[in-house]
Length: 431
Image (cartoon, rainbow, N blue to C red; front, side, top):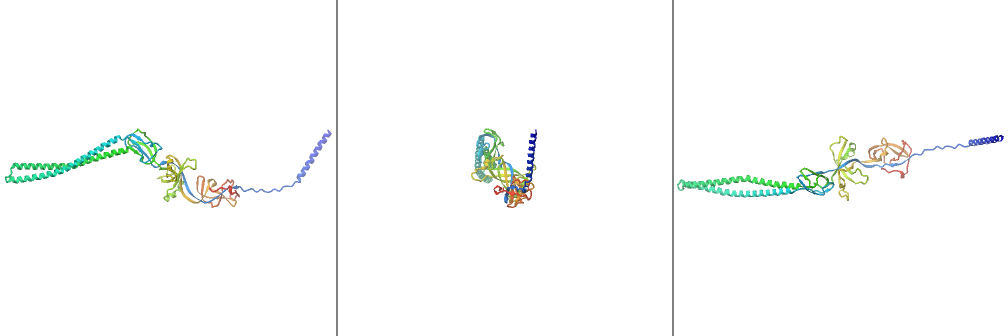
């Protein structure tokens, strides 16, 4: 028991001595000097500003429509005897191509009858003209005969007064004179009637010739021709159908003549109005609106006309764009690939502006402020924005050539903040 107590006391003494030695050594240590740590300036990427010349663009969407679309209608009645295979939806047709023929047999017979009436009228006129010539000769002879008969009557009267001629001879001479006078009057009456009769015959000839022309017109209209080179938009009849005058047979539109009607917000009109003021028509580019590739084909266009009034519902200005054929090589007829009804995006070229700076939209902060690095310090600068278009901002004042605008995120930015510009290989080019 005593030995256990002695061992316990020894352990306590050893631990106490060790603790005292450790405390003494800790008290002899030297306190290290603390050095203040200076924070490093944040690194930023910048883009260098260069003034540019930019043309303002007004974007709009619209639907392609044919400039010249014509309804094909029948002008004569009859059964469709022949229909050109090209007269089908989407098929191309050429100018004056016969697309439909209506049964012509009745018209051909009518023409033969009308021609016969012309020949008959001409023959009657020729016969009457000869008859008038004969009447003229007969009148001359009758007048001569009447003159001779009158002289004979006067001679016999003188002889009868001297009793050298009988009363019977005088009466006979007077009867011959009256007969000659009647013959003259009859001939004159016939000649007087010849004029109206000739007019009647000539009118009959004119009517007969008019009938021929009318039948020729029917024959011409029985063959329906394409009014221009273009495409068949719709067909409403089939071969063998009976059609009536005025019945719509289909619709065609002119090839290479397409328009787009777009609506421009009034706020966007300021970018193209200066061109109208100078009497110019803005140019444009048209491309398919749902195209996924940037290399999708586009077509040149120009503003053809401005509608007469502003849409009171949308407060937009309706404008018609005229799509132009692309004159480039190996294009054939490029408008053949653009069809009516296509939904397209139009970019109208407006006024040009010089000495403007173009920035990505996300670099212009609230209140039209940009972060500019100058001599290692941040400067929050107010700029004047000309326009915000898509993902770009056009700055007309507030930036100078050579300014470095911060293009990377910089939380907690403030004026005079020290920043470090990252090396050139990390910098971005001006957009």
